[in-house]
Length: 283
Image (tube, rainbow, N blue to C red; front, side):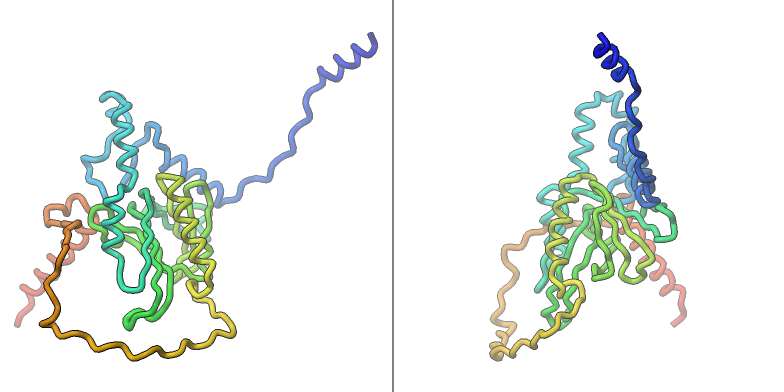
């Protein structure tokens, strides 16, 4: 009976308090607030700065009133980048001695600084692209890795930066990556991906590229200059070159699309202002 009383006594004791965890850092708090504010797909309005028009954005009330399930699936499909769109972006940026990797989902670009205490400002929305320039051409002799944001539909560059040994590109969250700007390392850039799987694929590709010191502007001791190869053969005459064959038109942009794409709105306004200035200037 005494043993039972002791057992009940110990069983009725309150549980030991868990060890207090360290308070989250300012950067973690900023990422948490950013995720709650912008990346919640359940009933919040998805704010898009570019790549979609005003008619493409629907609120949660409209979604629930129209049926719910089909609208949600259509919204998720819009956030995914199709194979045709990936081919379109890859064709747009691919060139001689370059390797192009196109992300499989859209991403929001946020800008901040090391002194802003985890505060981020939404800048653009587009398709993340990683370009490895081998630097083996006459016009591009510097080997480098470029990370850019392409506009959906036009493939125009909304933002770009070079990843070097001081970029400190890292995974700050499940679908949030951060890096330091190459021009000013006190400035930060953050990419919030719509699909965590696509974010992991991009990180795996970047990690493999950054493992090579030549890609991030690091010098390697004991490197010998490559020997000169044989003299290249002379180029054929223009009369021997045929017309373009197997041509496929995959990107089309018209003046009427300026209300849909932010790049066209800024570009058309600049062109019009320059045309007006030319007409107003005396000969």
